[in-house]
Image (cartoon, rainbow, N blue to C red; front, side):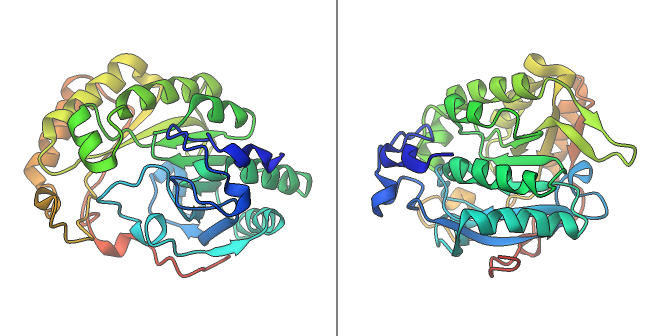
Length: 300
């Protein structure tokens, strides 16, 4: 795919118009150089994504959302990562498949969509045949998602906010809900159906993640209700309790705690009460920094 689209970059809803081909950085904090921080088998996704073999996860540097509480801040803000070519990315996809990965899991990929499409074209010609997972913030531009039709098998977006107040305060995007709702419509349209193999590993589908934040239980309930009322069993809803205050936040001290067991149980009970059946919940010590991988260039 022609990377000239990055000369006046409007890939994401920020539409910053940066000329990333001339070395300028977009809102995403990266130029047109492809930066990857880690590529390895990952065991801590939803069971139907990781399975026993692991998900072939590729963590891209930079991010077009930039939440103040980001769990992967080393790559989204700190920009840990190694510069590679599109050809090397294609090789990485094939290496992960050779290691037995259940899928290729593209994490924070939005600002590299043209690179990814080209890498998938190359790797498919050389035998890549496992599902492609698009693991994103949910703050996606419909026109960019349409470029991915026929390339992505599983969409794994976040759905972070319903209310404008936390969206503006924590992610500088008051329009998060409006944008994410349109993006999710497009994802569901593209995928059309949910398919699992004989092992229970998802081959096609949409899983929407919601990370519960401390102090925003009612907003979380509204999100779960919206998702279920609008999509029913066409999607899976993953209710996450793993929020971890990895950065001591002086500006937003309310974020300096994990959500309580009581808060999470209330949210899960609410989801069950309104009829959610296709869903995932987290148990045990998922809210731990040990679940955040090292972005040390492994596999890159």
